[in-house]
Image 1: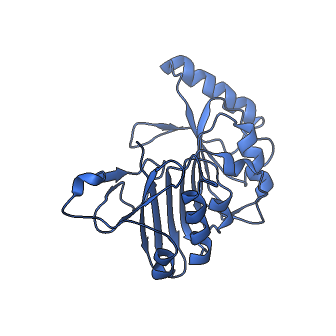
Image 2 (image 1 turned 90 degrees about the horizontal axis):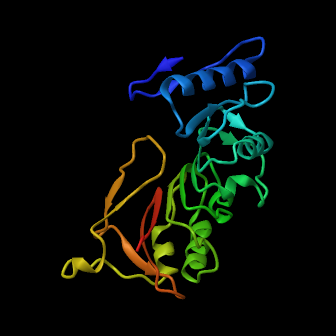
Amino acid sequence: MLCMEDGSIQHIIKCANDPMLVQKACQDHINSIFHYSDTYDLIISMKCGGPLPNITNVSKIQIKDETVDPQFLKNVLTTYSDHHSLIVHSKIVGDLPKNSPFFQVQNVVADRSGPDYFHNFVGRKMFLTLATVTEQDLIPFLQKWISNEAYHNLETLYIITRKRINVDLIRQSIEFEEYDPNEPEKRPAQYVIEIPYVGPISRVYHLGHEFVEIKRITDGKRAFLSVGVSYFRFFVHKN
């Protein structure tokens, strides 16, 4: 058992005659001592053989491996069905079926991903790093959001790409409104990212010249888009 700098406690079991029984007993013991009734963050690896840990009330899941297979991912997400956030610090080897519970998670952070990760996503917030995507993957996403064909629940999509993307081609494919410094009140001053991720990115973005505004045709819902040669930021206005 480790006490972390932020005051949280990490309970690690590497070897025991019956690790699942020991783990459950430890969780019950901690709950009784601290009268803890809140949710748990689970950090798990494919290297752990046998059944998955017997933990209840898991809200955030982190998977830390060099690679992870879709079946293991499915087993984890179906076992801990109360989760709302998933962080995968691994390359998912193999295709994720469209009905994978991965796409149902409300908040997702994933490394070394492809366009299917956000094309099939129905959750609220997604952050992708080292993503292999092109402008031809991003343009259909924008068009489907604008037409209200898909991504009805989406609030944030943040992608850091592995290869350069054609910014001009993306801008030419959609209608948008530039920032007007003479009327700054027409849009919010800033947007705050609320993705469960600790990394070298800003949490607060000023919605100035760097962002253009786009609107959904059916209801006028607004979103703010910033695209560079190696990043794609899409923030939906919350009001």
